[in-house]
Length: 203
Length: 93
Image 1 (cartoon, each protein chain N blue to C red):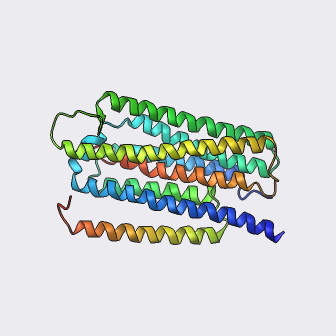
Image 2: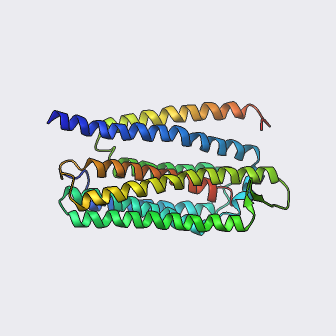
Image 3: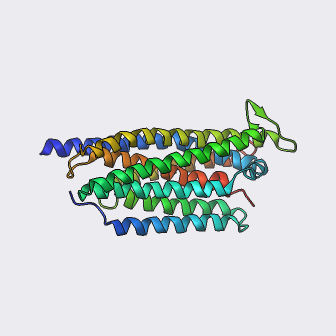
C-alpha cells in the first residue's frame, strides 16, 4: 500500500518539477517582453493595436471552460461516473482544438497584414524595429503556448482512451490527475499572455 | 477516493474566473496609464491563484502549496532582481 502511495506521490511531484522547469523557461520570455516593453513602449503600443481582442477574449474563456471540464472529469471519475468523465475529457479536447483553430485564424490575419518578422514584414511608420520585436515576442510566446496546447491535446486523447476502458482505479486515477495539472498550467500561462500581449498597451 | 472539492465549488470558481476575465477586458478600456500593467497582472495573479488552489488542488494539499509558494517567491525574486538591474541601465537596449 505504501508503494502505491509513494508511486502516486512520485508521479505528482514529477509533474510539479516538470511544470517548475517550464515556468523557468517561460518566465524568461515574459521578462524579455516586459524589458522590451519598457524600452520601446510606443512601438509595443502600436504592435498591440494589431491584436484581435475579441478572439483573445473568446480563447481565454475557452481555455477556462476546458479547465473546468478537465477538473470535473477528475471529479466524475472519482465518483464512479465513468461515462460523464469520458465525455468531459472529450469536451476538453474539443475546446482545446477550437482554441488552436481561432489562434491559427489570428496568425493567418497577421501574415496577411505582412506582420511576420524574418519572412514578410512590411510596416510603414516610426518605431519599426520595436514593432518587429513586439511581433517576434508575440509569435514566440503564443507559438510556444500553442505547442503546449497541442501536446496537452495528445495527452488528453490518450487519457480519454484510458478512461473509456476504465483503466484507472477510482481510488487512484493518477494519469487523469497529472494530465489535469498540465492542462491547468497551460491555462495559467495563457491567463498572463492574454493581458500582456492583447490588452495592457491598447490605450 | 473522495474528490477534493464538490462540483459546485468548481463551478463557483469557474464563474469567478469568467467574471475576472470580463473585469480584465473592461479595465483595458479605461485609460489607467502606468497602472494598466499592475492592474492587469494583479487580476491575472488572482485568476492563477484560483486555478492553483482549487483546480490544481494545492489548497487541500498544503505540501504542494508550500512548494508552489516557495517557487513563486523564488521566481519573483529573480524577476525583480533582473528587472531592477535593467531599470538602472536606461537605454540599455
